[in-house]
Length: 335
Image (cartoon, rainbow, N blue to C red; front, side):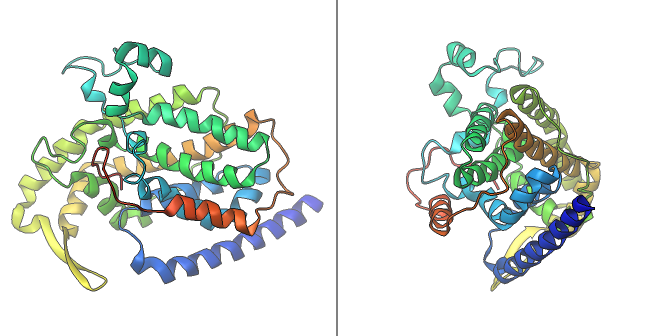
């Protein structure tokens, strides 16, 4: 009876928190950047897959975990080292017909010995950075540092999500090498904008992952395997629809903006046969499972009494959302 009572209290509390968040989202929707919806949705639904004792803490800070899911993108032009953490150009390491991974060690030290750190940084380090972030999150759990715990949880969700995007695994990240300019935003943003409400996000519970390194490389492999379809079907649908109907104009606040037409997007989405939804669901499951694994590896500390000081939360938020546009490391669209 006690457990049932606690569950009902948590359910009521969660509803209140989420209702407040929805109100905040509605108030700021017109000011939000297009393309961030996918990252926010992944972090949000990852919380719902957590076991009750961990979910009870995360759901109290749900608005923060969602809003800070885009912090790495917001600072990527202010921090030189940030950009490579979002992608890996696998096609730099192999020739057509070869296994993309035959010459690319999964272990960071072995990869540096093989290619040099400068090369790895130049062509992206997302799978290695996810492993690094997992250990940072684990340490925050061990030390019961709620400020860093929330920061690392929100941000590792972003990097894991990026690893699940096919166009984050190629030098042709925006179709610029195949005359398909804009395909990055099309796949990662426009399709999500139009189709996300139709997806099924209830995909079970978070699982313990014995090897984060193995799991993130499997995610990258699956993303890269889907790349050919992403590019090929865009060309096919573009030919079928025709240039005259490929684009349209929609109102974005006070601006009339050129976008991929709904007709084109529906045809392209259909041709992908559920790919976007599958990658989104896989990202949600992995984010939740990495959070859970970090907690388990930290000894499953009791987090129920942890509270975030108001000044700490303010500092974390301000540090994560600062945007100083300066010298750009490698201009790419990550959202």
